Image (cartoon, rainbow, N blue to C red; front, side):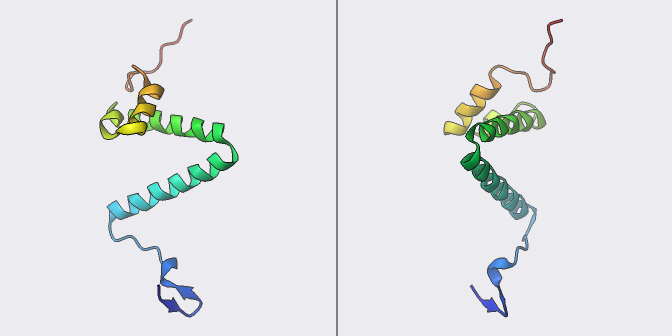
Length: 92
């Protein structure tokens, strides 16, 4: 780490490419979720479940193909046999 006046180079947040920018955003999201979990674990769980559903819908139902281990298990539990393209049926 190099000191430049009162700043150090660790304060400089310049992305090299879009992939790195995405990694940084994902890391920031994970950090924020951890902060929420420390204050309100149930809210954090709800947020993670909503994120899984939204990602699955955005990925045309293929989120499970990109996960393994505990993350895949959670996705299976949250999504069940849902069809991400179809809206949930309502009983009227």
